[in-house]
Length: 259
Length: 252
Image: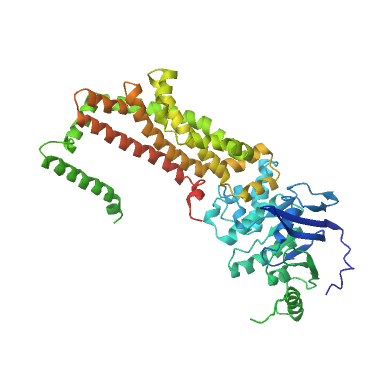
């Protein structure tokens, strides 16, 4: 299944080396992550897949600089990560948009260094890209869940980051909206070619989106296996190869695919 | 239909007034003035120009005390809430101050400022200060971490983080706290005027009783206090309907 890995020649954009994390609570030390080694290539779409509560979000928070690992290092372009950075934007679940700002205000939030004209032009571009035209003056509470999520993606893209971190971004959406949002995200990724690290517990989602799926074990999380999804986009989700890869991951996680 | 719903509170007040009228007049000895006497007393106060004068005097004291408390208490509370360590250090002290009624400060405020406007304003200031500090601390504590993290992620300087994330995020809770505190301040002004000054609605109530048991004037003072308190609350509540603040009051 990992055949073809060797031919990957892209330079690693992001490199985690020996990353471990444990939390101390009530005097008890709970290991959450153990010895994570991971390279993410420039422009790659990588999914971190694992059961709920396994520590994949913790890993994403470490990589993004919001948490400091107990051991190991994370480097981006060879530089150690020392905190959050506007070149790498974290997209939270839909609740991350600022409710006191309009759609325009949210998209322009990170653009305070630009001149007014540049900011307006950039805001308009990304509102259009995520399909929110006509809602410029709306407040988030007037938008649906899917629109809020697109708004947050637009806010992230507007500052032109190299990397996007997405933490189960579609988890709170209904299944139809979720499917549409996956298509939208792929369309945007193809247009902008950002490096994307995407956390999910949904196997189908991972196989539909990613170049590679990193399958993580239960706590303490280790990398169980890395699966390359060698199907070009747009992916036919009933093709034999798709089903083969998907079922391989089901088995890897130890799930029967009969209910 | 809609009009009917809107008129319902007025109807209720009318029924109460009628009940009050009949209950008072059934007794030979009047324990309360009846509504008509109170209305006449209000008319008398207006005619003598006292009602407006006293209302303005009370509002003047509340405005000063409340605004001073806001200007000092809100920034202080925001700063304390923002710095977890300050909060841990100061919280026990604030919780000890909290159960002390503002009225317990009356002797000390007279000692410091003598009998007069300043003592009354000081009492209102004290009564408003602590609730506003605590409101501001709680408002900061209640900011969801994702807003702060998003702000940090976009590379905001600490000053900009305060201005563009902390400040807008606390506004809805601050408005709620201001509402409650203004209610407290308005209650305290009456008590403060009973002891310390010679004008205002609180003064009217004690004075009417001392100068010949004019209970119609006492109740007229009470009614004025209630109506003005209601109007003040409506004024602050109107802030809650500002579009950029409304998110803080929705269920979602």
